[in-house]
Image (cartoon, rainbow over all chains, first blue to last red):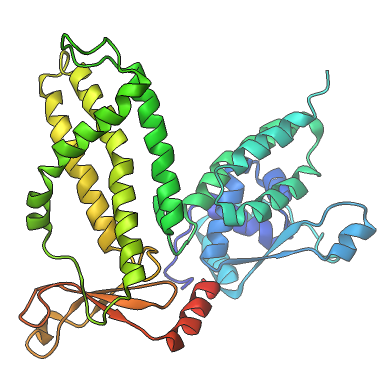
Length: 105
Length: 277
């Protein structure tokens, strides 16, 4: 599926952001500078295309940090393949700073 | 003055655009994200909830969509029609009445029943033509019990009664617009035909047992099998009461839509299917 898929620059940026560890909607917004009205529908569409999968954070993890649980996104194997193709098409994608914030989810 | 309530108000308003069965999850997701947003950017962040809610609505797969949700069951259909009829009657009282000497400038509440009856008589003149154009109603292969037929008849009569306030309002609207748009008077005929045609089509699209709208239309067979077997569309009652077969090209053995009643042993299977959806 990924071979034939041509992602828009916005979708590629979002995939890259998730791929570099910005796994929450707001962190994707913060790192890409896109509007919330763009990012959340795009995340849903990418999830529908099976390039991303989402899960809710464990309640215990959120309770321990005294905050509400968040929904986080991860790349699927198809998403990784699509991102690899997009990186060749949009070389500047690799400028998005990586982040490691997914250990506790 | 603190406006901390503003983002929540925006989210609450936007949530009305999200489909009802996904609203709770949608609100939960946005609220959890909102928790992390600095207060000065929260309202701007929440404005993005509107396009997101619209996206979710547009891409929401539902077994029965849009208006059909309100019209699927007979009671909700009648309730919906009653609300529209009440609104139409309220509009009727605001519109100018036809300029005849013995009719006041505006209709009074006590004139409304007579007005609706006049519309009923007017539309009933078109009923025979509609019956001819629309063809025969589905034949019931296995006889439907008489209580169900009585219920179906009552439902049809109530629907006809409830669409006539709407026709009356359109009649007065067409007359008042006729000064501006000379062909507006044609709207009187088209509204009556449209309303009655909808009532009859809706009746034919319902299960004769539970009167719910039939769902899951599928195509059966292919054109090349016409000589061997019928082909066309099949719709099912979501409660498993039966199937409606409509031939694409009527033939001697499938000239009219046919209702095939299923026995009670099928109903569990259908209810499970509905539950899964």
